[in-house]
Image (cartoon, rainbow, N blue to C red; front, side, top):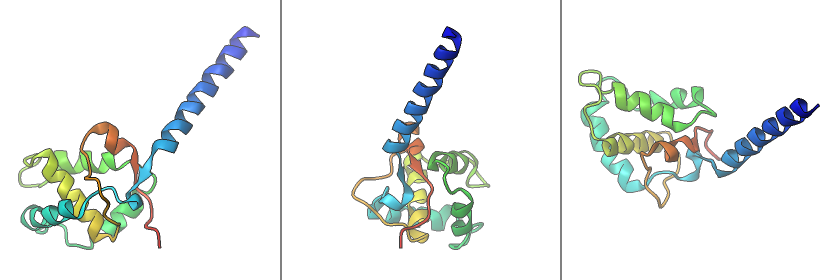
Length: 131
């Protein structure tokens, strides 16, 4: 019986930790970038991304990533783009491009810049826009 109780307590503590993380999570609909970042990202996007990705490319991409942390999208983007020179931009430049992609998809800007730390990006989930 003690093993069952220990297993149940362990499962309960994991569940509580997951709930705490979920409560702390935000979504891309919560204004997770600034207008300044998006403006900078627009210039970088035109220079490094537009040749392969037109401005409508990311709307269906974001829909497919619904419920996932934005960190995964950032990781793929920052490690494999631009195709001609992968991982060649600064972390902040990738964040600015991501901010521009969110603005293109009509997600709202906020007062706080999109931060490129793993912890911050892990807590931001892809979600549908609020209407």
